Length: 286
Image 1: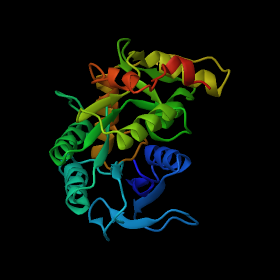
Image 2: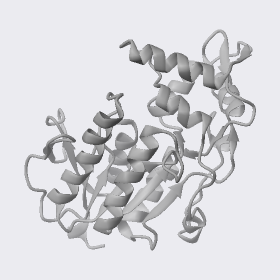
Image 3: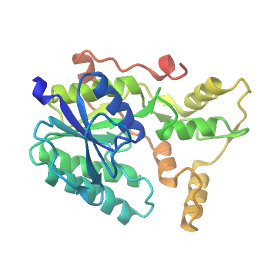
Image 4: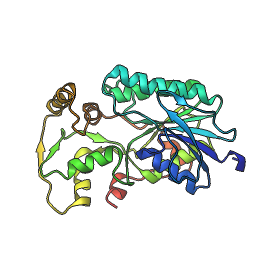
């Protein structure tokens, strides 16, 4: 990649993953163009006005080597609205960027047969990106950088006086934030032969291990778990959402915890590129 090509544009650059990537690309010597609603205060990099609903309000600079699409609107609850905003927003972005390669930040919730609205929407976005010739990266549970995203929500759960525990066989695939950044940097600099890759360590991390680890990193108070029916909790969340209540954790997110992906697609590719995906147990509590 030439010096002229060391510019990337990032949608959702203020979000949990977007912030991680913005910092990583800047540290690696890239110029980062943020695609967001308003100009970032005191930013040295450029920006283009952008929203999922409207797309970019201006053309991207000619030297943009790739667009990293992190933006996703989690505020919507209705399936039709979620699809209209997020899938429609991906369509608008693809039309706007022309031939510029797209790296789509997807999720391990996106797999064939998923029941989760979030996962199904991400899958549909992956199809659009593949048709454009881009790459989708399915991130596992991202940890190791602040309290944002799903890991932030689970930290709050783990800190409760009494902690609800999902069924014993529930698990997640996890990935350290630094490893995420390395994988995305590699994808921009050397596009992989696969349209979809998983970005997560291949071990299934039991939900109980995640909660115990997060609890231990925050307090010395012993964990007081209470077994709770996932299906019952899901129905309670759905009822609350139907009544217009915002309880801080979405029913659809719980569905993703209840029904995780069966495996990490093409995970061996990263080792071939010299990138290590470290296990949750080694880094989560640091």
